[in-house]
Image (cartoon, rainbow, N blue to C red; front, side, top):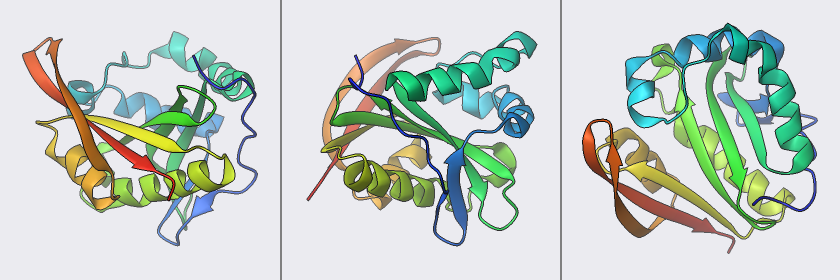
Length: 179
């Protein structure tokens, strides 16, 4: 599924003075690739680590995601230096519903970056893109991600048990809707 129309890439970053969320750049790929090999990142995300082949096609895949309306892959950056500090992505279910996923790079964790980025993207998605609902799924054991959902005023709406390489874990589903 996805949107029936393309998503217009951000012309200006979404920013709050501390973090900026912006379109992905070729220059971000080294940091994204390095973080994709981090054990904590690997524990919670299904994505395979980025190798050289994936890196070479990454930007064309980003552009295709925007063009087809499937997703809005973005980078979280330091608002002052523009150094990439994480990634954040909207994956469109329909024209008005998307899921949000994010990962903060290891050296930048514990600084409140994820909630700031999520709040910026949620406001943009609900008010500029016209979405009515954004879903966030997190493993119950991923306390950092659950805290992000709660800090960003997402409401817990469901849970389910999923199999993983480590056994079974409970996925908690949160939702944020336009008021």
